[in-house]
Length: 376
Image 1: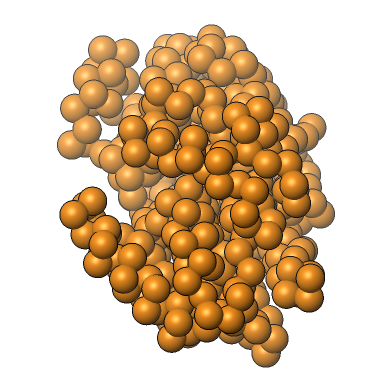
Image 2: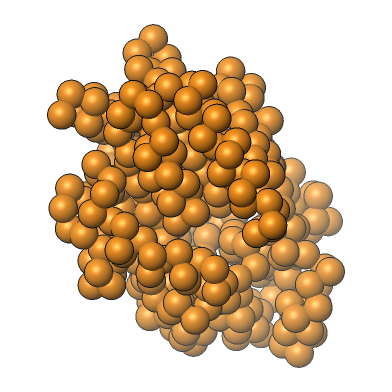
């Protein structure tokens, strides 16, 4: 069965990582995956190619290239003749529906939505317009997957069709993301910190919804109370060239206590080096980074947005968004636990991910969905 995945881009992000994970574990004797990226190969293209999955790039870097991209998309769909066209994110979903319309063999169309709708004013104008257009077009796909229950509810309130929609969460590779004592030492030495330095991590691209100011506000409150705590921030745009971040760090007197690593490829090792992981977002659907940290045996402090609290369960702390005092207090409570208790809490977090969100289980659900769609 040929599955054509259509995604906006292949830069590092929650949906993009889930696509990579899905491709890595898909039963290739039954399913033949192909990927179309509307913009570029991004940071994950080589990883997908290494799996032996063909990638086609349409190069839609501007609106002027739209007619050519549409022509290329139609040509590829007729060449590949997929059984199912699986769209990823808003642009990919729209392109998947267009591809389904020009398909000569009646390919079934599946949308997957990985966003929450906390505040559309924080989205790009084109993305916001596509979200609203999606509500009108949502009666046409054969299925709509939402990565979280919160996301499903928000989109249906906006006008998305409830017909054939359901929730399918992200899955995590607990063999790739796992605890590592050696990783703990390596990250501290790379940052020129003492082996017993306490590290609190944050991972996410620089975007208003990630609310890095909330994390840094909590860091400022905690740093004056615990001299051995350091804060590691990872993600696209989260580096020393970011003027706003650097200004906030200076204003909070956090120079030397906050380490900006930018975009990194070795995320399993970085997560395993943290003592605590924190997600400080003001809006999420199903944050991949929380599950990856938990799989590495790292207890988490998260804001109560999207399905974050559901993921963490009783293995970490959940606080209101936009409240750096509450975030700092929750971090401090985990810091004050004896090291062995914190380790056991991290192990419990890892077991929760393996029990509820293992990659094999989620990929199995996707494969059942593909077979169900193809036979109806």
